Image (cartoon, rainbow, N blue to C red):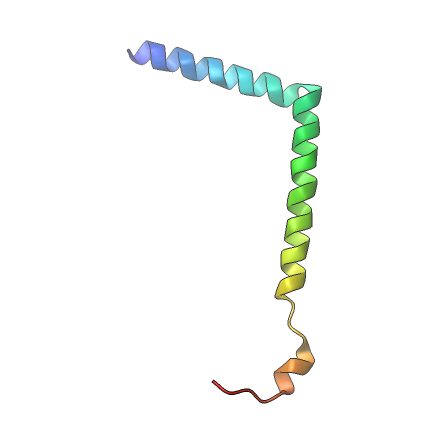
Length: 60
């Protein structure tokens, strides 16, 4: 039974490698990278604190 699982795992690994090296896989990876960069940039912008607001009083 372990051999079946191992061979299935190897087959999945080969399929994944082939897809990642295909033109479609490369394009999908590029698109995903661009999207993650955009999300990261937006998150960084949202985390920025307006320094003027640090001088304003607030209540807890």
